[in-house]
Structures are given as C-alpha cells and as structure tokens.
Length: 144
Image 1 (tube, helix red, strand yellow):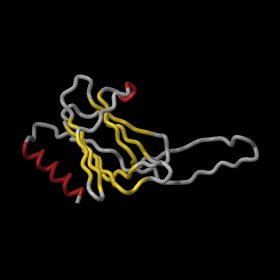
Image 2: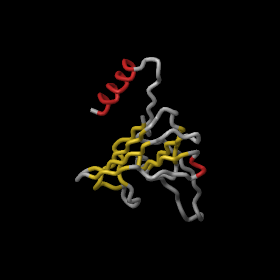
Image 3: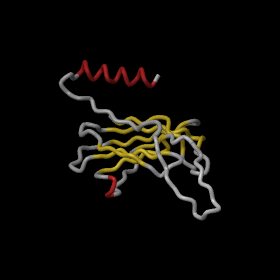
Image 4: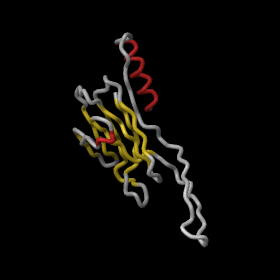
C-alpha cells in the first residue's frame, strides 16, 4: 500500500508540475553497521548480537544537527495502535535536516532536506518498543 501511495504521489507531481522537482525524503529502514571493540581484559571474549538495526527514531533539525536545534513536532495524534507526528517546515535560510536513529547501535545518519520540503510525517507503533531501549518502532517516515 505504501509503495502504491508513493508512486501515486510521484505520478501526480510529474503531471501537475513537470518543470518542478517534487522533493521527498525518508529514512532507510535499516542501517548496515560494523562495530569494533576490544576485550577489557584477556579473560573476556567479545561477540556481537547480530540484532537488527531497524529505524527507531527521527529528529528534524533547523540548521545542521551539530547545532542541536531539534524541532518539536507541530502535532501528534494517537490511536489505539499508532502515534503520528507531523512537522510543518516554513521557509528557513538555515535549512532543515532529517536525522535517522537506529536500534542496537549508536550510529545515526542525517541529510539536508531539499528546500521545497514543507512537511515531515512519522508514524510509530504505539504499543511496541525495542527491548531495553524503550524506543517505539517506526513504521514510516515521509518528508515532502
């Protein structure tokens, strides 16, 4: 269903304004991470869990993430199963960045959003969390 929706959006953009680029951004569902460590003492052996690095959080920044100007969602709606957050992005000389955070790693990725992106929507599962981390499972991220 999501793929059909995204294809329809792309098709509508192409028909409605073929001379304009329809900007869209999202987070990859997983992130390949290579971890390195060393045993704290010779009698310890290091292993890795192999747990999935699924998307587990999203932050929207005005300005580069290093400046830590994260934005609070403009709205949040909750149903029995889902939590929906929306950021409305007005024109900004500083620009906006999308940061994607992943479970089972401290690695994060971010990218500057195209200048014509005016909204980001994130959907979380309300009653499902990553064990030990307490973060909700992200079902979708869409900035357009």
